[in-house]
Length: 207
Length: 207
Image (cartoon, rainbow over all chains, first blue to last red; front, side, top):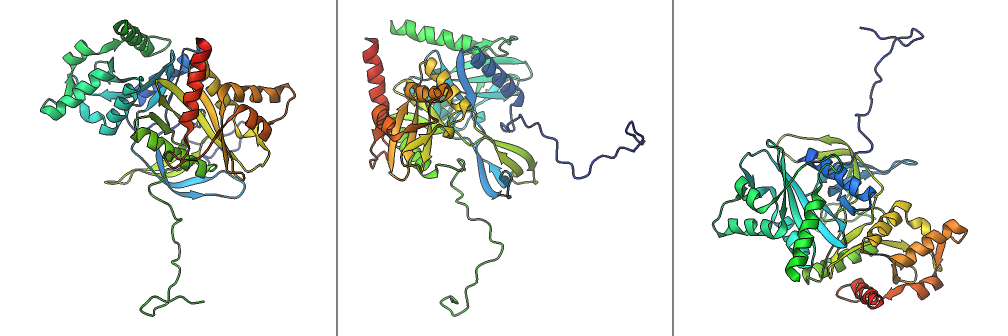
């Protein structure tokens, strides 16, 4: 089928067209795009309403070869994804340093701890010891359930696997130890409601 | 001049040699490498001694084309450097959220405010309003002098340029308003000594 412009000349698809890319998107890694997108949108809401300043860190990239054409921007010609040495998100809320990661599982009844790298847990443990609030946001994709698992609970399950325990956290353990987050409109994932509860509980324990 | 190997065969520079790249380094942008390297080393010292957990954020990169060869790692074939929307460093120290940027100038007598982007200043202002400690580490390269300029002072100089004031901060203003940081061995740039002073002063003002 030939398509013509209104003036009658035939339309041809341009050759050597660059791959379509949305210039507003940053690559945030391969997994968990949709949970990440929802968290990013929630963080934007929190920032715009001056509730918190939380950003996703860019994916670390190992650059091998860069071309510097005259009069135009540098082009990276060869690069590789690197493993992040920390978590994906951090920022400030109510005067507190926040640090967390977001993970998804397609499992129905348990979350495999292999989703975390040891250095991510160690990073959160270090931040927690300095007074930061650290946690994981975990989505059971097939159930569409999101949980916030607070740092101390996550660390306990993490250590258990090295003491002969299971290498995952069961759904029942989430229901008992984590906070279920019900999606809303604004923000999509109102996880700071839970963080505020944790802050209030910590204060209560100190008094 | 011909250079020979010990066995007598002449040495020739290899053709088409790839650009030398240190595989252990992450690209942190074009400017301020040496100050950044020293801050990174200082942050490593602070982390290893459990004094603070502060990391440099990876440079944001806009990925356009990725090749996924079978059985090997994904190769980024076309990508561009993006402008960072926040500052370069953040983390936690003494329970406080820290957020800062590092800049260098080859000027002798003033620091041009054009080194900052408006959104970097706005980001620091937001974090400051939530109780974070925000500042800039600025090196006068030719004098080899490093200053820590605290957020409220930086914001004042930043705003001044929009009220008909100068578009830079003079060396004399640094000497009056900022804290000089004398390099040490461990850490190389002991900037948390100054941050501790700022925390103590803020506490004193609240009492």
